[in-house]
Amino acid sequence: LRAERGPDVMPLCHIVDQHTFRGIGHLLGEDSGGSFADRFRMLFEKCTGCNPRLADLSGFESRPEVSLARFAQGLCLNMALQQSRKVLPVISEGVHVNLELDTGVLPAAVGPLPVTLAGRKPKEAETEGSQKSKKRKKEDAEKVDKPQVVGKRGKRDLLVLLGLRCPEDEVVMQKPVRATRDLFGELTDQERAAAVQQARSQSHRLQSPLLPGLKTASFNGQVGQWMVDGQTWTKLLKDGVKLKVPLVSSPFWCPASKCCLTPERMAQLLRDDAAVAEAMNVTGVGMVPEAQQLVISMSSAVPHGTSLRAVALLRQQYSTIAMPTPSLQGTADGVGLAAYEGDWWVYRFLVLISRVMPVALRPSMPPNFQVLNPILLRILEKWIMEGVQQGTSSSPQGGLEGSHWKDQKLWKEMESHASLKLMEHQREAIDRMMERDQELKCGGHFLIMDTGHGKTVTSLLYAYRWLCLHGRNVA
Image (spheres, rainbow, N blue to C red):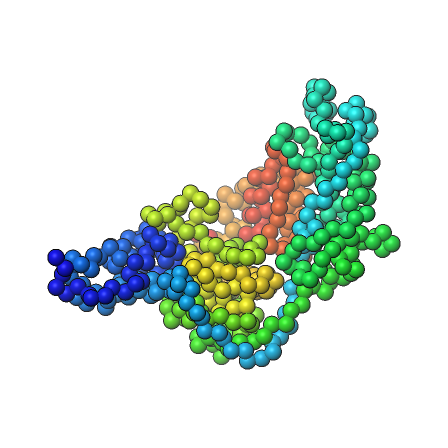
């Protein structure tokens, strides 16, 4: 029998919980629980699990936990139904912003360049001066009956990669195959030179969201440089990518002075459901006035882990930003990145950031975002990192009790021991990564070493040195 006080109509959003939209846990407020498991349990046991035909629901909608749920359910439902959003009015033609390009943009835009050279016999390969270790020579001698350097038709298929720091420092390698082999050492200097010459003799199509409107890369032998649509890559690096961005109206919570957001005020904003809802229900073609100062201020005022997690999610993304979601039980689902406790603050922080620059990214179904302009997203990422560094330098204690990374006993012992044991190529790799961090403000590194050459210890030591420079205190 139907309960006497049951509602005649149940809100459509009542069907929305973790079973339909897993990202709802990122929208629930602070009092919903300290883990995703607690949040999902509260949502089901206190709200969506109630059967309106049987339970006594008098005063149901006024219950605090139901109010928390209705806020998150409503926003998820709006996204699912693709409700129209308010278009922010343009208040000015805008300002110019500039993206400093990383030197690795051109090699990434061109990609590996396939070239084909005439084949050579296995014994010739042994006598042409290729630099091999004694161990490799012995292995090659044992494999004399199974030559790996010659293709089926007597041709060699190679790849040419433009230099990461200087595109003219090309790297030549064999095409990767399933069988284990030395992709670099089995090539002679003559073969490398021939492969580079062949790659330089052709024009190559560019594919990069960071180089809009640019189509081809080619090598100009007269100036000895790679060109992009007739311009030297050196000049493009110097000029960067310039865009003019319109200005749109600011949110109601925006302070009069964009540089005065305190940690206390930022904590209030992250808990402000009205600010989050307003940011999720608008769209625009620009950014708010003094957006750079506001983003830096916001990023320096939130907890260090929140801003760093946000930057990590933005990096290397060009179409969508998908935050990790937990399983139905609120635990790691075993697929992709894990969703951590406190990720709801990271999500809310990014939602507020999207309101400052809606032309760069917009919230989609929680906890995801749509990237509208990859170039502006890279600029936004840079501003957030400036706020991270500003917050680190202005708050020695970082809001935590404990010592700094460089004073941690176990890590110091590891660094001291590893520094004595590092091989030359490991030292060089760490130094180059630290250099790129300092000079180029790059968003990350690719560390490529053969099996057994020490990628793990190299990465650990680099990470520790980075934390000594940029990390806050640890307990």
